[in-house]
Length: 377
Image 1: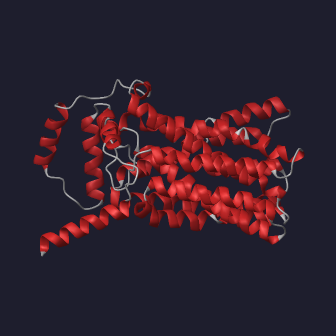
Image 2 (image 1 turned 60 degrees about the vertical axis):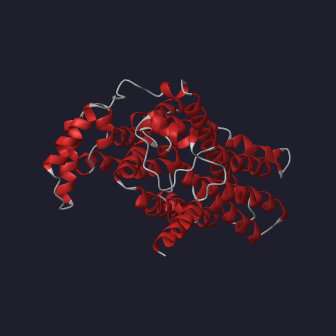
Image 3 (image 1 turned 180 degrees about the vertical axis):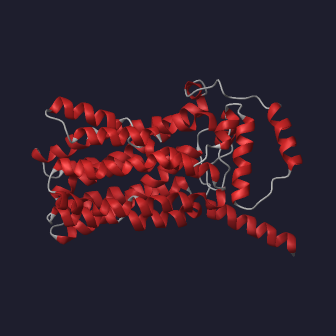
């Protein structure tokens, strides 16, 4: 709620600036809320949904609300015809975010991790009433008793990750993977001007790939798994980044669409993967840190695109190489498909220890079905 208000205020302020310093200050204010206003609501969705529907519902929110609006963005810019009007039109809708407190309850998992058990139970009971489900009072009593026997993590913060070797490795790798996805994604957006086609049409068509790619991610990620989905589609994106260099005309747009389509899938998988690898008490701050790493590395994308002034083939070659790195990093991360989101640091360590490189969710489900069939015969 606060981040939406701050973002809206920063965007509104930027329409009245008189020089570059004032503009920078206004955008800094808006930047403090950017991503936070979206990702916190996204985390709540992940925490409230069970493993079976988590991937589908989390990705549907991106497919519907992000992809359709970003596709329309260049035409909104044309209609506005002035950067101040664009800033106003894109900032004022954020004010609706102040209403989220009325509809979006706090995370019970986070409340429990902070020792606020009674508040968490109240939230669950409210949700139960809305869903027309009664929570057994005896179950609540047993739950309170069990929580008291568990060591709370309210005094542990993000630095605890760096004190634990296994968690440190996982966290650094997911940060690097997200950085690769961000740089390839942003680099392709900024490279649209290099395509031998109309800029506005190219931007809309390529941006629209977000919609089908996120829908497909929602349906196949639990089948392929986070690890192999990121690996396969980052490889495809890198390949078509290089192939653009050998094409011309409409073919460059087709290859760019495929490259953007593929990195969209890896990017959205990595967005969901981060929260699934962090314990409840540091999930918000941990995901924020991952995204900050992505923002930092995105500063490099204009310089990568600028390399065309030296060699026209260099920007897309560099982007393709980064995609190649992003293809390899996921292989060292644990698979989280159909797992309960970790509540403690120990949960993450246990999840990491029992993983192997060739774990494939669809093979695991096939083995389970074969074992069940064997028991029934």
